[in-house]
Image (cartoon, rainbow, N blue to C red; front, side, top):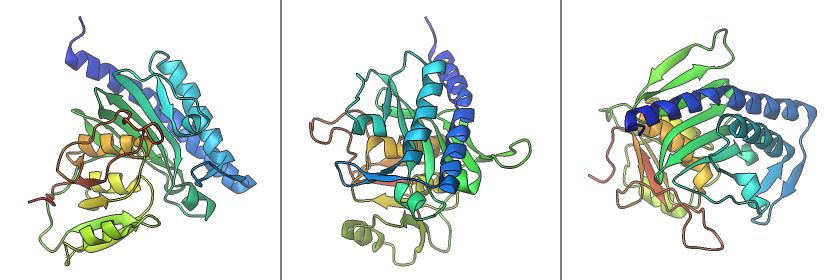
Length: 273
């Protein structure tokens, strides 16, 4: 029988094997940006582009090669009505998080693969193609950042930082700030607010560039699974508003089974103390 440590080593090798596909998906997104993208509107009124579909196809092909027995919950597949049966282990894929930012010519969009086991993210990759950066983390094995545009892809180990003496840095959404989120932020009047898009907010905390990300608004499981894994591997956590770790599994809601509860992502700073 395989031991827990051997199993985690297996998942670590698996997530490492998927890094090239995440880079390839990012390259495809950037190529479509240059060539010109097309935009459609999904049933939930959110935009989707040909870059979303192209990147997701690359990731699904790679996962089917390296982990054919593990189901994949992918955003655009779900939007098309193709929802796999999920077991104790599954992938959560958001091939282009921050589609609006991509459409508007921004640089904060990301490519995301998260691996879930027993309702918790245990490994993840987040890439920001326009920034030339990639973050990868495996819980229990640490996290690191790679410069994917530099020769040899140099990497740096990352971890969350302790609470700063001169006020915390709160990272907040560029386009999804709810009144409830603003009320939460108002609890920390001396904080510096740093705007960022997509799952970059989670990895910025993981690398010690920010301390807190409150999201009191809708997100889906695939939006944050990869970033949660990287942040947890770096020493942080993502919890609900009662301080409990999020549970990654379908909700008993037929209309929105993959909607997350409101959450708070933190590094070394405890917003509930």
